Structures are given as structure tokens and as C-alpha cells.
Length: 234
Image 1 (cartoon, rainbow, N blue to C red):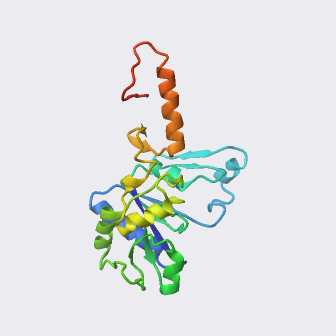
Image 2 (image 1 turned 30 degrees about the horizontal axis):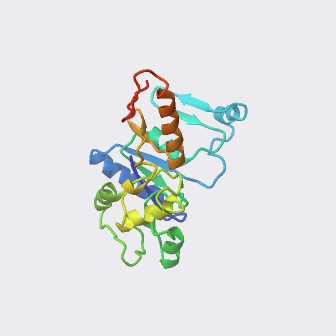
């Protein structure tokens, strides 16, 4: 999955842009997922059965003939939730703290643009103000094509394996064109794990521990010889 963060201040048009992008990408044959980040501590479900159940359970699943949802009464990280969308591209509305995603700016002036993108993670601007050197696609279709061409999603582990203090450092280099997602140590290690075909990021420490543990256990079995290990579990 690739993803892009649509960032802007209140009433800047984030939701409208996400809707238009979703419609355009879907028409292009792309499976689109969306995520909305809010600073409100609770979702808007006051006095509902879901809210009452969440007060006394570890999670609530809601199922109808046409929809399904899961609610947790505690924080979950966006990087853990995006794979559940089962989409080709995820449009993330709000959450300018996500330094592991590239972004599209909706800024009204230079000061807003600086506050929305201090780490220089913007692929484009689609607001009234366009920072110098940044692309401003003329249509939603052009913006959608830019996203499909340049968007990405780092794991958000901030492991430091790429030589940067956090994922934002590598993300900025990818946006600038001086690095690629292949430079992410958590995605490009020698030990790879996938669940239902989706790669599971492993920071270098976890990768070493997992690889050494598996090799040590297999070494106790007859017929073991050092080499490339392949495992499949269902």
C-alpha cells in the first residue's frame, strides 16, 4: 500500500479534497482507503450502545448486512490500522505529525505552509498558496496521478536503521529524490515476514533476534545445514 497525508488547517477543504481524490482514483481503477485523524479524544458516538459497551470491554465489533467496524477504547497507531483497509492507496486526512508519510498541502499563506510542512514532506500543494519549488497540479486528475507516481508509506518505526533519527528524515529524502523506500532498513532487511502477502516491517534489532532464534532452533534438527531458510505458516 502507498499513502498520502492531506494536511491543512480547519475549513481548508481537506475532506472535500479527499472525497474528490477518492472518486477520481476509484474511476482510475484504484482501490482507495481513507483514514481521518482528529484531535478529539473520543469519536462522535456519545450515548450509543457502542459507547456504553466500550466502557466495559476491550473492543467492540459492529456488523450489519452492508458494513462492519471495530472500535477500541484506547489508542491504536495509524501504521497498524492502514493494512486493515486492504487498499492500493490510503488517503489520510489530517495528522500532520505523521512524519512517515508524504503529504499534500492546503495552505493559505507562507506561514501556514511552514507550520504544515516543517520537515519538507510535501509532494504538492493544492491550496491557495504554493511554496516555491513545489508542484501545484491543475486538476484533481493530475494530483491523483502524481500521488500514484510518488506516494509511499514508511513503517513509522523510527528505528534509526537508515541512518536518520526517525522516519521523517528518510521520508524527506525520498520526497526530494535522493533516496527510495528501498533505503528503509525495516523493509529491506535480509529477514522478511509477510502476513497474507503483506510485508511486516521489522526493525533491525527485531530482525536479528528473530533470525538468530529461528536458526538456533533449526540447528537442533537432523538434516539442518546453513543456507537460505524458507518458512510458511497458515
